[in-house]
Image 1 (spheres, rainbow, N blue to C red):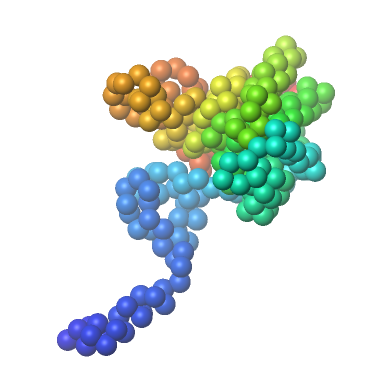
Image 2 (image 1 turned 135 degrees about the horizontal axis):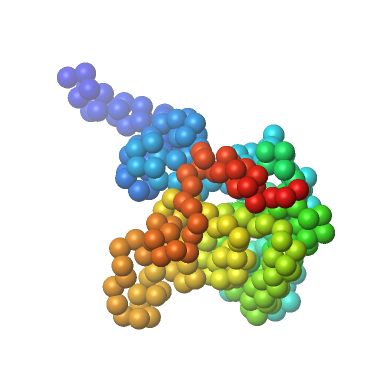
Length: 280
């Protein structure tokens, strides 16, 4: 009766409005409602179904690197507008909005760091920046990260999360695939290891170039991995796709991945791999 009285007077709806926003998180996979503080303790992995939420690039830096420290480099590089591109808004306006949202310039953070005491050239993509799309600047930053690994003869680690090449830069974005792949061939000739970490999603030109060229390729569970999205492929070929198509598990079954690693085990796994493959 007390609840009915409150509902009739509008007090119940008012109480619900007073619940702080972000206190609870709904799992996108199983629908479970989880206390956000608990989700944070689980590194944004659903404790019910093990779904891995997308997390900001800075959180991966804290998670993977010794003391969460990265000596950041190349952070002054910024995109130009060589094609004078305009869709729903001008490209420079889109860049400015992305900078404001992501809190930096461009969708890749690069630098030098240590993992388990081993020096590495480290790069991580930021999906919050225009979907982690690869334009000229991201290609250049990846290239410089590879060159540092070559010059210093230290392992290369790249964490990928991308929707592919950036359409606003056209063929200039696609050229980054060849540039980064060519440098990785030099790195391979130098016998310097490259560990590629794939997160959800890793698609398009990024997947078709450096992300798939690691000496060791590992991925988080249930990540979307592939060149084109499953819906595009299904519409193109006019056929139903296999269950779980383009998931980490599907690619692991087909031999494309070396290992699927849960987020809480990612750092220890990388350190174990580095100790195994690194001669330094």
